[in-house]
Image 1 (cartoon, one colour):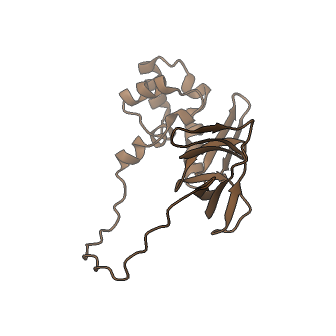
Image 2 (cartoon, rainbow, N blue to C red; image 1 turned 90 degrees about the horizontal axis):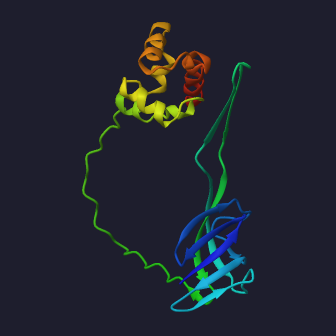
Image 3 (cartoon, rainbow, N blue to C red; image 1 turned 135 degrees about the horizontal axis):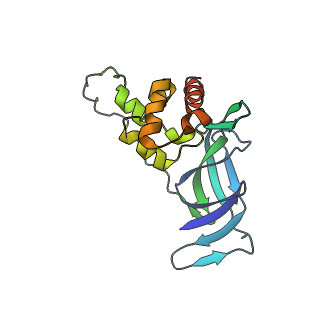
Length: 204
């Protein structure tokens, strides 16, 4: 059995026991809330569609609150000397669906009072990522004027990271322009300056 609900301007398909993240709600962890904007409920061979909402309610338990991954925004105005960098992390509330109409999620099985001790395992110290792995994770398309096709061309001549672009000298830029027929694009869009700004923002 599942339902389609409307919350925060978004639609979610939920079933009993599902966990989902919705727009931030004013509720304490452990509290039970009713999601009353139910658009559709489907069971074994049955289907109810609201016009637009059904009288059925979906009950959920608040698991907790958190913030999503940081979204970085970089804006640059060509030939204006203007660069703006901003970041945003969206607040959310995590819910667990416990009831859809008359159907209720089965209670969790009680854990055994005693448990066998876990075998001792060797704790390994975390190893720093190799420079090649860190470079491979750079997204060169963050630079204005660089698209997937240009990224492939840069990778073909060994340029795979923002650090490499930030360290380009005038001789390097002339060589890359010549090999890839960029005709001054690197200087015109200030790739080196953009790469330095992105690296600086990533360390914050």
